[in-house]
Structure formats: structure tokens, C-alpha cells
Image 1 (cartoon, rainbow, N blue to C red):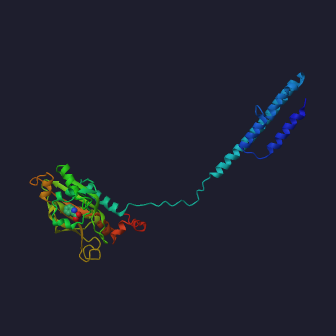
Image 2 (cartoon, rainbow, N blue to C red; image 1 turned 90 degrees about the horizontal axis):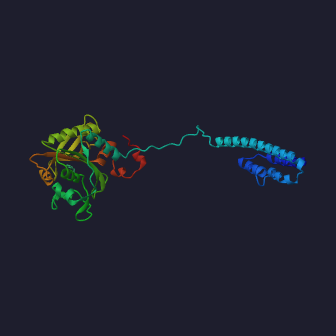
Length: 342
Ligand code: PHE
């Protein structure tokens, strides 16, 4: 029998298998030798026809041995390659825990949002509900129902952005008072935060700013209730020991109307730059709800009374955080905003 043929295939396999091979090269090698159709070892079987009958058994055995030998070698190679490839992957995917971490910048809430949340929290603790109205209002809700008819001189106090004769950008969150009183019968206790708009622009005024409206309507509500509640409010917002002072003022929708000052929380009332030497800082407008406004909403002023107040959010933020220009609150400069995290 032609043993030399077997030896030649063995030798060829040894030479080819010498190179370092990865799994896919080994797969090709396996095909080249053991493929059922074109494989070199399997190809030997085709020669069986030409082998004399008495040698057939021995030849077949020889082919099988060769096949086993090739298979064994391939398996060893495959195992080795697989182990190497795994090792390679482990190394490639290794994480260096000594590399300095990427710094994650933590943002904070905008000062306006901080102040708004602080105020909301204080009043929520006193049982107020939140009502958020719309920024586009009708003339009726922003003015007329608030006892400010078309020819009323108080309309000049607020430079209004009219969209049409009927629609406007609300100049005050007070418009929400009417919506609430139309929808709900007393007792009413709501807080209404939102953006308002006025044609006004300087260091302390912006055409868009935010207010927080408060409204309480029930039996027997007086100006004393307003002041008592405001005393609690300013102490929580600015610190213990801060007092309030009411000065007479005028708003069409409240009677009497007051301007509310707080004792200066920077100097304690001695007089400083913040309070311009007066010891007091104006903080909000308020008053007892005008009977006419209650009537406009179908609430009987002989039975019910109420108080309302409106506070400017940016103004509080500026006072609290020592900001001297309202524009800083709208420019989104992180160097400014990063400094305010209450
Ligand atoms: N709406 C008034 C303003 O914007 C503030 C205010 C609200 C006054 C409620 C009294 C009562 O100036």
C-alpha cells in the first residue's frame, strides 16, 4: 500500500499547522483536510476503487487513522486559539480603575425657580392650593373684572402688550383670581404663580417677569388675617426676626390696598445699602378684595370677604441673593447661576 501518500498529507498538515492560527484560519484548515467533498483526507477514499481487494481494509484503516490524527491536532489548535482569543479580549476590555473619572457637572435650579419653590412650600404648608392660569388673557379677566374698566386711569399703571382689542399678555397674575372665584365657591385659598408681561425695561424691570398671587376668601376675613399670615411668610422666607409694615396704597381690585415692607434682612433695620438707609424693603402689594370684584364673580360681599396679594419673584430673588440687575436672571450665564444654590 502507498503509505507515502499518507505521510505526505501528514507532513503537509504539519507544515501548514506550524503557523500561528486564529479560529477562522483553523476552520479553513479543517475544511482543506476534512471537508466531505474536497478535503484532502476524505479525497483518499475516492482512491478506494483502485486499491486491490485484499488491501482495501488496510487502506481504509490508514485513512481513518489519518483522519483521527488530523482531527485531534485540529482540536488542540482550536482550544489553544480559543484560549488565546479570550485572553486577548480580556486584555482589550480591561478597565483601568486608576484613570481619573470624568467630572460630572451638577446643575442647580434657577434662582427664580428656587424662590418660587420656597414660596410655594411655605404657602402649601398653610393649606394653599396652586392654580396656574394662562399667559394670554382677555381684557375682561386682566382688567375689567378686576374693577378696572376701559377708561380707568389705573390701566396706565401697567403698560400692556395687546394682541388684539380683546386679547393681551396678562400684566398680572391677579387675572387668575377671577378664574378661581368663578369656578369655586368660598372657602378659597389659592396661590397662583406665573409669568406676566409689561412694556417696561430697566435694571430692575423686565418685559417678562414672574409673580405669585395669593387669594383667600371666606367668612370674616380681614386685613389682620393678611398681616398675620404675611408675618409668618416673611420669617420663613427671609429669616426669623423679620417684621412687616403695611403702607396705604392703591389697587382697583382691593380696598383698602397696601404696600407691604419687610424690615431689612441685611442690616436688621439699622439702614444699609440694600434698604437705601431706610431699614425697610418693599416686598409686595396686597389688600382686602374689593366688594365689586366679589360681585363680578357672583360671590356675596355681605357674606364673604377676602384678601389678596401679589409678589414679584425676580424682585425677591434679587433681594435675597444680592443681584443688582434683573437681566442677570434671564441671561443664563452659568458663572452667575452657579453661585446661587440655596
Ligand atoms: N396685581 C398687583 C400688581 O401686579 C399686585 C397685587 C395683587 C395687589 C393682589 C393687590 C392684590 O402690581
